[in-house]
Image (tube, rainbow, N blue to C red):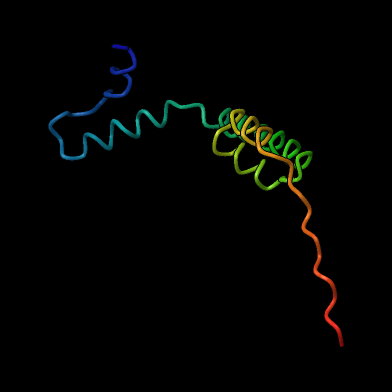
Length: 92
C-alpha cells in the first residue's frame, strides 16, 4: 500500500491548492486503460449474443457494459421477450 501511495503522491506538494487533482490524475495514469477497453468490448459482444438469444439484444449490451459478466446473469435471469401482437387492421 505504501508503494501505491508513493506512486500517487510522486512530485506532489500536499500543501498546494491543486494537490488533490494532481494525485487523482497520477492514479488514473497508472490504470491499464487499453486492457479495460478491450475487456469491456468483449463483455458487450457476449452480452449482445446472450441478449439476442433471449430476444433483448440492446438490454444485453447495456447490462454487459454497466456490470460486465454480472450483466450476462441479469439478462439470462429475465424472462424471454414476448413478441408484440399486431392489432388488426383498421377498416377502410
